[in-house]
Amino acid sequence: MLGQRRPRSARRRGRRLLLVGPTLPTTRALEAPLSALGELLVVPFPGPAFDRAVAGYAADLVVVDVTYLDEARVRPLILHRFETIRPMVVFVSETGEGWWDDLRAGTSGPMMATDPEAICALMTEPTLRVAGS
Image 1: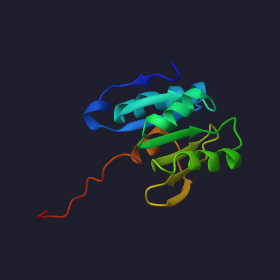
Image 2 (image 1 turned 90 degrees about the vertical axis):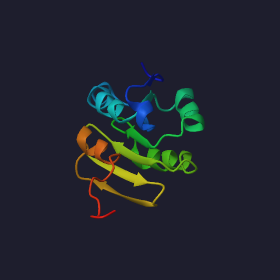
Image 3 (image 1 turned 180 degrees about the vertical axis):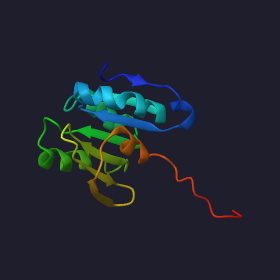
Image 4 (image 1 turned 135 degrees about the vertical axis):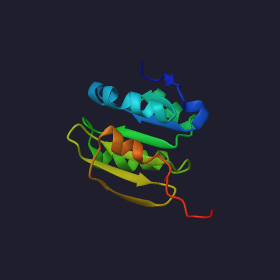
């Protein structure tokens, strides 16, 4: 299933999500919640499928599983590859640790929670509105 798009309600919302190099447990945990937010593409890392996704997918959210990778080496590489697209990039591992980088806003920081709900919350629109607007 790697390298295949999973369109569900995605086309209605127009969001594109990319899950990079996931382990099987990460795929099982994130596939359904991310698919509910938009069009999900799952690709291995590194490899041609990842290269094609960077070049042609224009993701809004990129979730990178660094469980078996050296995050100190992978993070700068991933961020560099997405600098022109400027998505939200999240690095997660099965340890529960995580880091997010909002390339559009130029901000980043550690994630206190990396469960599916916390990751999906990064893509949800705020529901508060100013009265009278």
